[in-house]
Image (cartoon, rainbow, N blue to C red; front, side):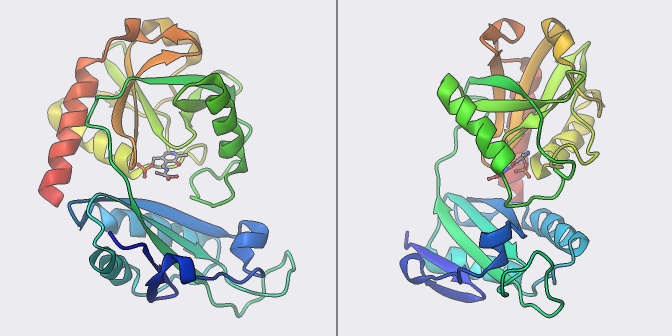
Length: 278
Ligand code: PDD
């Protein structure tokens, strides 16, 4: 693979790409991003990722760039990325530093091609810690301002586990630092509603569809930490994560540390869907 990126529509060696220090993405985190899986040179669910990115950009009044999909495809071809992901970032652009953005500003568009090998479906037993969710109220915007997540990830790293789960005041399990979560409880899959407290994951959305097709009942309701002894299984999901079982939370096993049947079923269904889409 060649280390290339696409900056403002121009494919170039990553080491030569330069971003202006006055870029509002750098100074203010005034930017959104997305991450899209690439398998055997095929970009998975690109339309859904671009729709989320574009919807977010419209909400924060950044001009939606044209040609993103073709830039993505050109970069995969030019870099010969086989398996990994594309990182797309759109910032408001370059302007003299002022909180208030100018009206006429051209967005900065960066796409990185990143080689990455993904764990097989339901193969990685994940351990997590829970932490009070002190992020902001717009977690549905995939902003590059990720300090809340980064602080959680530092605690995760120091605890020697694989994910941090953000939890509301009433013990509502919201999502991971970079993943969504589903819990099987009373033979219903529970996952936090997409109400601005979580990122509405593309993988989460596909899994809700697949669960319905398979006939696994789902409810968009927050799993509760207070009920964790009753969880029959739990799994994390995301573009980079796929579907992986959560086997331990805060040093205690989840569902006796056993990988659940619904987790395996959905992990395989997702894998199949990804293969069919590619
Ligand atoms: N993150 N929740 C959060 C906070 C996330 O950062 C992510 C993914 C998800 C899963 O969303 P999706 O299924 O659309 O990937 C949920 C990406 C992978 C990242 O930050 O790199």
